[in-house]
Length: 227
Image (cartoon, rainbow, N blue to C red):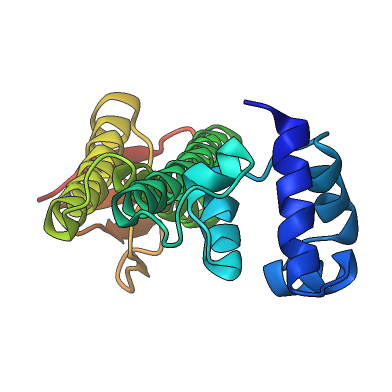
């Protein structure tokens, strides 16, 4: 493939239409410098751009690559192949970007979850708030990664729902273990009640069990599940 010959052919086509490099650059949505590099043979249009150039000048892609006219009409099969290749290339680039975004969001979400569980004590509601926020980032990142794996929306939705349920189950189990084994209050509680009859007692409610905290902050503190 002779790039100089291709460049001369592109220059000839441009002059046939009485266009300057600036005008051609505007038509093809590229810079003047890009057109100049094509015509000097120092650079080549990518495959996606070849389709647009061929359409604009009314020549075939093989004619551009060979640097000379060989037929009046553009070979439809060749054009369709080039279009398909260009579309495939764009899809690959898009998938690559989505994969990077998915990895970054997932890693960031996981970092927030781990940091929240390690930095904030169980008594603080900020731990659960940041853990839920991290879960949203993690699930969103998983959604981007799934787009690169399957095109079926139903499968992606099921996988995302499964991931969300798995995180919910993990948080619930961690709360249960924290209460049962380490005598700590549940982190993912939705309500804390100060009992009116016993001021030294707190009741922490979660979706699946209720925890009583007696004598909070004292040496005789007790934390246990009542149901």
